Structures are given as structure tokens and as C-alpha cells.
Amino acid sequence: MIVRRVYDVPGVEWGNGISRRLLVADDNMGYTLTDTTVWAGTRSPLQYKNHLEACYCVSGTGMVVDSEGNEYPIEPGTVYALDQHDAHYLIASPLEDLRLICVFAPALEGQERHDFSRLDFSQY
Image (cartoon, rainbow, N blue to C red; front, top):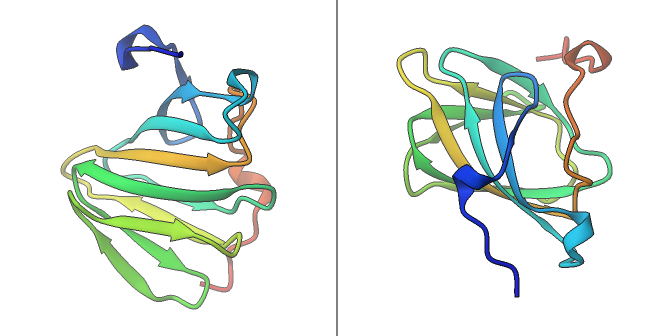
């Protein structure tokens, strides 16, 4: 059995926020569970070529924008799933941080960070 408290797990700065990786590859669950804060006013170009991800919003507001420019509002109670390794922008409201509970499959190692300079999102 694995028992952890979110504030006992060190946060990893992933680029535009903090991610507390509650379950990682070494836990042998096959997926990662995170408690992720996206800093207010940030716009993050993201794409996971090796992982599928689902995010559930627990607080704050924002938007996810797909590669075709479709905008989807995010607020508490919203889930979005990147089931096709979708390129997207994650945008947090300028007024408040966005807090998401995220699941990644396969599992993350635990210290991954984003390098926004390596992504080309000029088409949207």
C-alpha cells in the first residue's frame, strides 16, 4: 500500500507552475498522479508524445486550446483528456492559479520539466 500526503511530496517546477507527483514510475502503478498548480496568467504550449494525460480541475479557471484553435473553458468540475497526444495550450486565468489533478500513462519518472522553446505552436 502507498500512502502519501500532497504537501509531503516535493514540488517540481515544470515551467509555468508546480507539480507534486504523488505516484511515479518507481511506484509500479503504471500511471502517474499529480496535483498540479498552473500559475495565474501563464500560457503553456504543451504536447506529450510519450504519454496520455487526463486533467480534472479542482480550483481556478482557465482554458485549453487545441491545435485547430478550439477553445475549451476550464473551471472546477471540468475534465479534459489528451487521448491523441494532442498539442495544446494550457492557459490559466490572469486572476488566479489553476489547480489540476492529472493522470499520466505511462508513468512519469518524476522530475520531468517542459522546455517550451522546443515546441512550434506558431500555427495557432
